[in-house]
Image 1: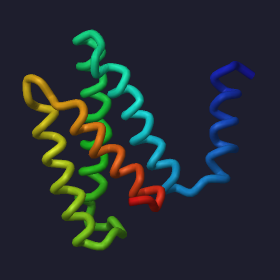
Image 2 (image 1 turned 180 degrees about the vertical axis):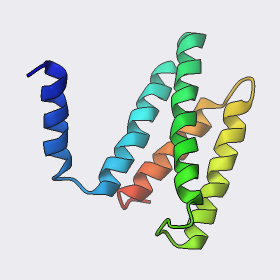
Image 3 (image 1 turned 90 degrees about the vertical axis):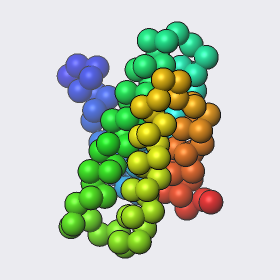
Image 4 (image 1 turned 120 degrees about the horizontal axis):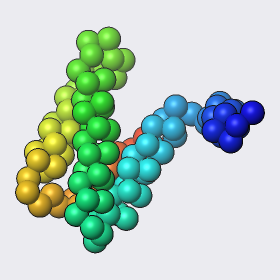
Length: 115
């Protein structure tokens, strides 16, 4: 078994012991790690971090727009509104990394049951 296969197996085993919400929060935390690392780094690192954050939020907005999404409509609408604000910020010439990181931290905290 290759190292990648071992890692995938370990992740699958470990993720079975954690809630879906905790796993979703980890995605926000992972993107925030990348954003924090890139904030004062090279322009290329910043572009990559913004691309990762954009991918996260685009996916989230797609999922929230699905009529079969089980979240209450009011909550979905609120998160979609935040997501659109995040996307507008990322489209600017100089995105505010601190603002984007704070939004992601709040999303992760909400998923973990912290406010």
